Length: 152
Image 1 (cartoon, helix red, strand yellow):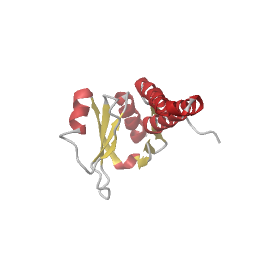
Image 2 (cartoon, one colour; image 1 turned 180 degrees about the vertical axis):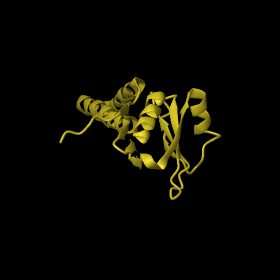
Image 3 (cartoon, one colour; image 1 turned 90 degrees about the horizontal axis):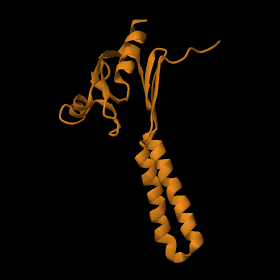
Image 4 (cartoon, one colour; image 1 turned 60 degrees about the vertical axis):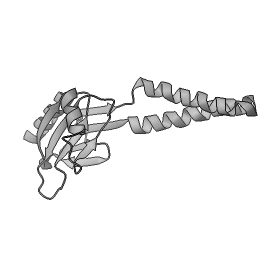
């Protein structure tokens, strides 16, 4: 049995500047260890860069998928039957829902380096979460995938 391809899949990766910052963390570690000699300095460069790169990659790399009858956003897996209307948010709307319009009970997959988002109502009466806020580079495409899979 062959599995069908996901109607929507997106990986939110860390911006390029984070990788530069990771290298600069390594340079900082190298400078700290410079008084101890060349070998510790090189170890600090390699180790500091590696640790910072792993941290940037683990935080900055998250996936959003619509697979079968579920929306998978990071660690959360939500059945599509529990979701209502999806609202595409431009940069200004996304900022508003991240700040003064935000509900503390909402599920936020927030990445500040992505200006656009999708806000999806949660219609399950057993779930106290009022909505999902998903940072995404392609909110229209994600909303369309949710509508398509919900109506299917």
